Amino acid sequence: MTQKDPWLLTPGPLTTSRETKDTMLHDWGSRDSSFIETNQRIRENLVKIIDGQESYVCVPLQGSGTFAVEATIGTLLPPNGKALILINGAYGKRMVKILQYLNREYDIIETPEDTPPSIDDLDKKLSQDPKITHVLAVHCETTSGILNPLNQIGKIVAKHNRRLIIDAMSAFGAIPISIKEIQFDAVMASSNKCLEGVPGVGFAIIQKQSLEQCKGNSHSLSLDLYDQWITMEANAQWRFTPPTHVIMALDAAINQFVQEGGVLARHKRYSENCKTLISGMKEMGFETLLTSQLQAPIIVTFKMPKDHKFDFPLFYESLKEKNFVIYPGKLTVAPSFRIGCIGHIGRQEIRGALTAIKDTLAEMNIGDCSPE
Ligand SMILES: *Cc1c(COP(=O)(O)O)cnc(C)c1O
Image 1 (tube, rainbow, N blue to C red):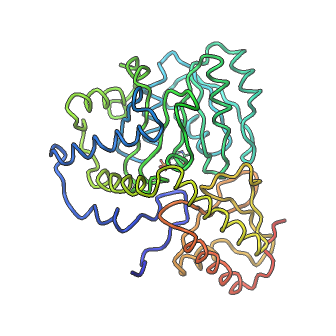
Image 2 (cartoon, rainbow, N blue to C red):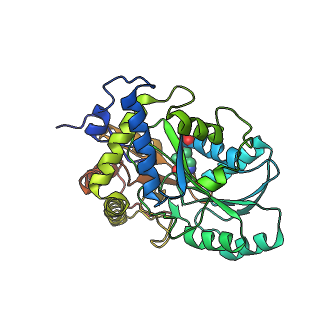
Image 3 (tube, rainbow, N blue to C red):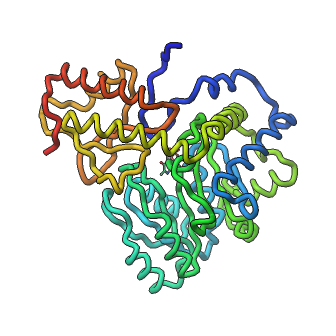
């Protein structure tokens, strides 16, 4: 079978399997029993990924991941609460923007994009400021691809008896998070990253006991996850039109995820993609932003080569012609670009991308890709 669509080596949306795409060639009524059953199954399967069957619930929401982040924060943080946001990239900053829109109190701990948050600073802030009720952290900060020390963060937050909300958007399904290892109120993710579904639905997996206390917190009807949850528990239906095709595709994607071997198998495939990518790029002289200890097997940031003949828009277009889509950098610390390791791809596609990159460099007449 020939792959006519380009391979998406991006942070999402990603390449999905034929099986997942095929699922969408039907129509479903949102009140129909087969759709309702599927919706129920997805919610249960997602909770299992964090070992939360006993005490957590999954609340899905229409829209991209940011909708789920905004909805979760607005629902869980009471109007008189205060958030502490750990920032080392664009997604931490986006949570700050959400807090500003919500008009809720917040503080930040910010480190550069290639540096994990300081656990000592977190410990100090929580000791000094009793008003802080919630800590908001990003698992894999997709801006750089850095893996933040979630378990250490969780220990400190628990020690101070505060609540933790995790944006695990780009890690969920590929980097283990379990309630057996870490205490948290909620973890947020979406259909179109490591679960390899299509874009259009986000979700939060929330501790039931916490969610029960959240009636009336939300500023927004459509983003109120408490109301979404209560309604879905009552009649198994969505309050407002659900993205039916997206949900059916997510169900198919989760079936394939389970067949593959769950989080550990996906972590292994993406790690192999990541290793193959980095070693191939290093052979051409490229350098990664992050050291291997900080690098999550999700997306890799490469520094821009210093050769003035390297023109990124041209490089991007030429790779696109060869059927590979990469991603521009979003860093403030250094000019860069990113190549993703996630989606329905394996080492063969990564090797194909490396060949396309080599050919492109030859066309551009570039011998050495080392950065400044
Ligand atoms: C993708 C992503 C989001 C959500 O982005 P959307 O464009 O709204 O889907 C949030 N946080 C992180 C860390 C992400 O990688």
